[in-house]
Length: 484
Ligand SMILES: Cc1ncc(COP(=O)(O)O)c(C=O)c1O
Ligand SMILES: N[C@@H](CCOP(=O)(O)O)C(=O)O
Image (cartoon, rainbow, N blue to C red; front, side):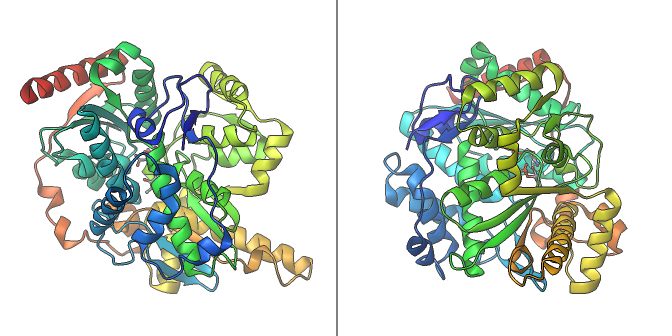
């Protein structure tokens, strides 16, 4: 499989080089040249198989020819052995037609572990094959950072630098990053918000001499390897509910659009997905875009679901590329508009395609708290605030579709399709918000019981490209001197 950039001006790469690059050299995001498909028979044959077996079947077409089959199987087995639930990503029923897909059984209690545990093993393999080292630079609103640090800590061929918005992640999220004291881990608390962190990351990728001097790579969802690993749980959960013989819908708490884009890919691959529903918090740029056709960045307002406090949603670019028939000139125009004026608009035809496959809505702070409380009261199930955004939007969507089908006197259609809501984090990562909403304090699991007492190491840096680059250069030189 070859990979092409959404901006059309970077070399086509094979899988190993695409994941090592992270972002394409023209500023675009890599996508497979064609979408591989699985037939209904192939999908049906996966029913009852383990998560690792489904993972292999779904991901192999993207990797084949670049990594030996047995090596890839071993990486998958090792990655998912780090999860503390046998099913890896179990489904829990929370309503007559509503299921929560728990993606938080990995080492850092967030869905990011699902992809990051595999990506670290893939990068290790690629670097070892090339006899190379890489410097990973990542931006986080709270969860990617912890998952990446956990997955890459102590690895001899990578240094990892994570930028997080100072004072804007939860205390648990911060400690999960800053209490990892391995020599190759460097945490930067940036005086800014997540969009500033991500903006600096993209500027560093665009700064060729800097990028080359540190052999820079990235593990945010701009990296195709992240998306690839996230496709798997759409298949595993849909299979549990009768796919491919029964369609399902998904509601996805959304920020950077990586997770829901993986759902779009699952649909391209042949999984019968009825609707993909984008659930945002009050930072609702994606919901506004679907409503108006105009993508307009406004300031970020901090919320109780801080990992989704995002306005510049990187992976939306991959979807724009698809709905414009892979015309990179349109994507370039839109991204130039975004850089210049913080906005761009989408023409009627691609907008109609977006609205056909996706729906979108938002949850206010009050909606989020009320949902945590209601689900606990009705089902005895404690949601984290990000997953509660998802459940709120899913329930609103179900009520609207039910009303529509009653009006049409139909018994089939959207209202009967099972809804799977992605649960993206464990409630113990956000104890203050969960307790305020429900009266119940979610404790960390025993193996993380002392997290908040662990020693921290971090550097506070202003939102200035030069300052951040200087810090990374100095630290990565020191690391390389030590290695050499
Ligand atoms: C807990 C949680 N939920 C949802 C999201 C949104 O996922 P995505 O950025 O892939 O849309 C994130 C981070 O991005 C997150 O950390
Ligand atoms: N919510 C994310 C933001 C970064 O998203 P990514 O999926 O692109 O890595 C976080 O928790 O850091």
